Image (cartoon, rainbow over all chains, first blue to last red):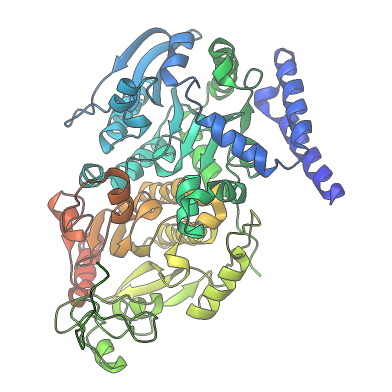
Length: 313
Length: 281
């Protein structure tokens, strides 16, 4: 029904306009772009558009965490190792100066060429990666530095040693640690927000998502293999569980969509970084000055109230 | 060369004649078969080989809690269909079918009860309800169980049996991980206790959230406790999996659970833990 779709679009737009991230004159051009983008998707992204997001989120030229670090951070110092027994190259952590303040950054990292991809395990973290994330975030908490996490992980690594090293527990404890942080935490999904591996570092005060990123409970292929009994039905699965940014915003899972240049971030890393930097900066400004207790309380309420269940019959 | 002809008259692991699943009272490990009352008498553990049969949520509660002590809460919560999800069948149809099959409104039962005279809150999962998957209602029920425990100042005992997050609610199911994690943290901040009992299977999204955050983690023998299941690991990595991959025994060896407790000892073990955490109060 056209009327229903239009209503939904209007609601989305009014929500977008009222988002704190988009407040202020200097972001009005982004608002316009977003409006155009939302006009294009006319309320409900088509199955084709959803699949395009999946493809763009996985595009081999898409900027990765360290591409953004290079463009947005000064005095970057990378932290290595989980202080237990390993250093996971699929997840990077470090301290750097972002727009005048010291922040701790945690991000999933994929590789650009074959050798690098293998070294980074295609961006799929091991428990050692979450261990590194946790100790970096503890450092931030200790010294009052805000935490920025960039999420870009196909999923936690499905391997024997990953299980033996306690993957499930590590993902749980990393979330628990984020729920205790007394410093601001901001997450942006910059590519694939795949399942438990993604949420491990995404329990933040503000959760943003780039225009062409996806955020999923399971990979489209995994969902298709289970529900359709055929991994080849990934398109159908993606269309059914709606992992695109517009839907995530509509469902209240994310707070704002970060625009990408032109047809996607892969075409212009510099501009993509500028737009991401602006969004992160705005969010950090908003959260500045709040006490640790307030941050913790609001952060937990945020996740307590996402996707409220229907009222009791 | 064509396939060989099977000349065996009878095979231990022959597929059942009707092509369906083996009878629920037949032990999948040793093929012993039991009457309902026999199984019940042995707490649904095979007296011959020790295999732990799956337990329905209310049966589990009956085994663990003091007689007539359990009062269910939030039983009327039902899932709706936020994504209009349709795979081979509509999600709403699967929900209705699960409710008919289990007599439960969702894959978790919560309420107040007592174990060995010590009051506690219980949150018990039901695998029969869509594979014990966690959608918004399971997340909500668990969060309410945490809040109930904190308000009443009693420990929370959770018993998990689940395949993980429920795909049919998409990203909202993934959001149940941080939601339940925050609920546990609030409980801990209030001085509360979570004792997590992991039954077969406890995997994926539930293992990666509240189930792993208990003050004490207890597993049933032979329970599969892995973030990724053996089939997916095998398919993805082509690694040879160890025989005990992901099992409670392997988790115990690698230091991920505190104890493996056979079902007959579970109630006394929980009683002991509740007394210890009560610390004479």
